[in-house]
Image (cartoon, rainbow, N blue to C red; front, side):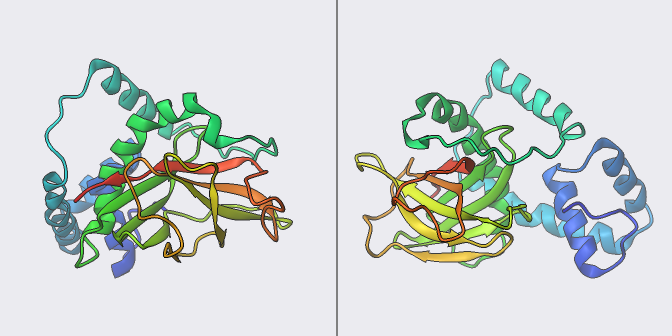
Length: 240
């Protein structure tokens, strides 16, 4: 949630500072914040704090030279932020684990989103996670959830916002590693709530392991496999 530049609570200032440093504000909002920084010492301190906290992100990945194609994608994505409208939930079933073209498209975007949004989580914990996943909407690649794990036997699913779910539907959490016959359900998820999931009955986490949230009946999929449309999807990235 983007906080207005005139909010003056400590939490509002901190949220605004984090979004300013991460670069998720619109051009107008960013200009308003920069004007406010000239006189608001508390907001300036919050921005400085976030800049220091996110500096450690540079230790997580080796330097990479972005391709011209990637820069063009980033520019198009930034231009589209101000024009994005809510997308109605699709009711079209699909088998996500067989859609290789979608995974190829998500690979670069997922890694970039992981390094960016995962930084927020890394700076708020004393133990760095060994795996990070950013779950994005397949339609516009908008991030909706982050998965982190400092223990390969447990993951934490963290919302980045509140997702609208129809009253007669529920979000179901799935994972599938390479070599598995099909996805395994990790249970139902309440929108906007953090969820810890034990993986003690599954093999340890591995790089590129798939995770997704689908829209199912309120009691979950009746067949043990996804039957509803994909809402968010992503791959595991090892960061340690």
